[in-house]
Amino acid sequence: MGIFYEVVGVIGLFVQVLGLILFGVSTGWFTLQVINQPEKNWQLQSIVYSIFLIFSALMVKYLTPGAFGAYLAGAAGAMIFFGLIKTREKPEKKK
Image (cartoon, rainbow, N blue to C red; front, side, top):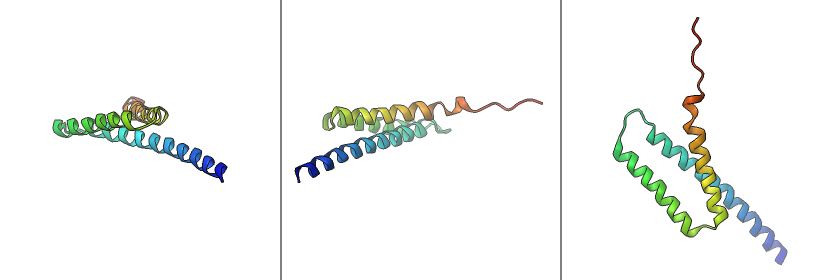
């Protein structure tokens, strides 16, 4: 029965890491969506960015280093990927 608990523990850690990658991607995407809005509402931007930083600070304290690294990888990947979408659009060809 001890091996069963060890296997379930490893699966739980794997699911935790995948969940934190997904959470990092979603928070990074949401933060960029708010910052890149056409109408610049500085109050909303400052609140969203502050909450993003508070999430990161709380995760430093309460998560394991590997789980926090998964969160940061997801958030950084989302900010790089979704932040560069405008530069990837192809310009129209002139006839």
